[in-house]
Image (cartoon, rainbow, N blue to C red; front, side, top):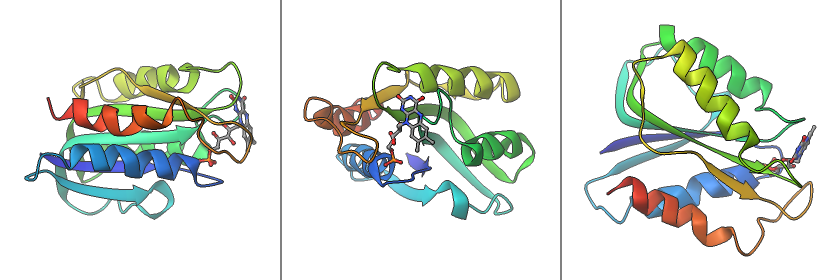
Length: 148
Ligand SMILES: Cc1cc2nc3c(=O)[nH]c(=O)nc-3n(C[C@H](O)[C@H](O)[C@H](O)COP(=O)(O)O)c2cc1C
């Protein structure tokens, strides 16, 4: 499976979630994983992925402007995906708030992109992190489950 993991981050926690999900996906040796910051992604590159994962920190109850722009441009880009899943990091009571919003928006703009799994929502202990202990193992586990 060819997988693209895209993340946005301010303090590095969402990047860490992306990397741990990647570690989980790598339990299947044939999987090819590319992890990229949303600010650096080239939408004009003609590439097709079996799975695109998109991650964002929760910023005021929603996903970041960078991720919003990315999702908006994706339907008309050369970058193609067959299925998707999303992940977020949050502080406080916003469990799954951002993943639900991202899923809704992606379904709206790309109805043919198949949601392979419900989103992953990871809690951080403070504005700058770190990821709380009980959520840390969920990241790699999420990646492993995507291989099944
Ligand atoms: C501008 C801003 C707004 C935020 N608003 C929320 C919020 O509404 N709800 C929440 O749970 N966390 C909120 N947070 C906390 C972030 O979710 C937290 O900083 C983030 O998960 C850390 O991820 P990162 O290291 O990848 O940036 C906010 C953070 C910033 C910087």
